[in-house]
Length: 169
Image (cartoon, rainbow, N blue to C red; front, side, top):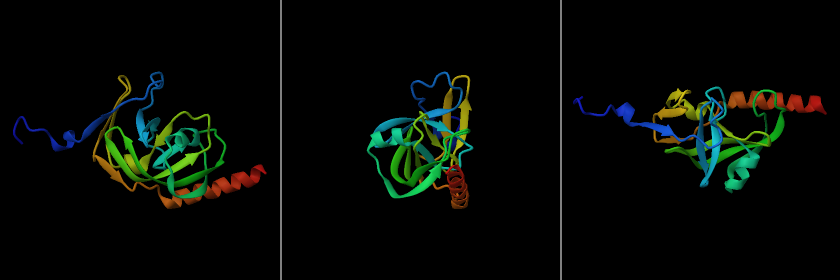
C-alpha cells in the first residue's frame, strides 16, 4: 500500500445514524428505513431473526411481506408468545446498507417501540460500537441479499409457541 492509500476494509465502514429518542438507552440502535419510513432498530447480535418489526411500526410503512405465513413470536424477555406473521421484505435500508429479500417477522407486540436487526443480517459485518459516544459502525458490504434465519431454529421456536398457546387455552 502507498502511505496515503485507504485500507479497502476501512473504506467499507458506515456509521449508522441513531434514531431520536434513544439517547438514554445504552444499547446500539440504528435507523431502519422501510418503504421510505424510518423505524428505530436495535442491533441485536443475539437475535436469530434477520428482522423483527412490531406490527404497529410495520403497517404505517405500507410495505407488504412476500410469501407471508402465520408464525409465533415474542418480543424480548418476559413477553408472551403471540400469533405473528413471517415473510420476505423485498427491500429496506440500514443506514447506507441496502437489505434485499430479507426474512422479516412482524409481531403484534404494541409495547415494543423498535424493530430488531439480528444475526442473519449482522453476521456479514464487523460491528464496532462505542457505548460512550453511542456511535455504531458496520464494516462490510453495501448490500445484503437474502438474509434468512436458520429454518430449524424457526421451526423449533414455532413448535414451542404452539405448545405455549395450547397450554394457555
